[in-house]
Length: 113
Length: 114
Image (cartoon, rainbow over all chains, first blue to last red; front, top):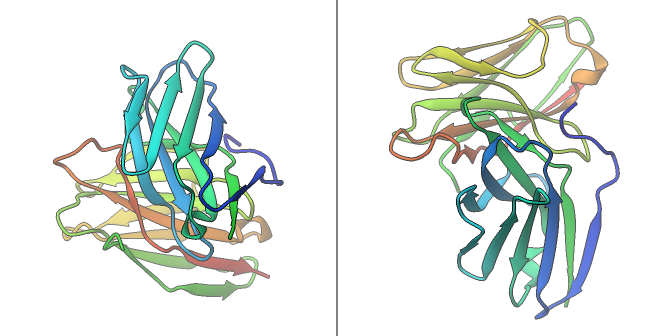
């Protein structure tokens, strides 16, 4: 399938530290990227998006960086809080393939108080 | 909360049976997408409906089918259930006034096939 892997990468950080979650994508025709947060028992929650004509976008406490040269996306969370603990997914949309989103395998973020 | 609702919350079915899952989109959204999320993996795109017509399909067999109604709510039907169909089924809606890629997800239906 397009989303592979049974073992989620995990990232453990101390409350108040900054977190960086990374994602590699494979399709150079992808022109739109989204980060989602998924808490246990819930559906994915939209965090921030970025188009391929940008390399950085900032939101509230979050920043997304896009490096098209190496097909890499990152999500930076400033001053991480216990409520940020969740699984984070990057998703890409390939140009001219409609609204289909292709999700990465996800990273589990654990915030220690 | 996104305003996207799904029913039922949980469902247990036997292999070979058929199941129908339901989704109500957020007010004002006319596009609904369905995803399957196996345990420990990211969601996989099943198909999308726009104005009651299928608008793109992922790599799923024909026994996965759907409908969208005039009020933009949607159903996902799965026939001849297999054990591997056990997963969280997610519905996402999007707004015609924004990029169709910005999708808002419901809480999902957890399907267990025994």
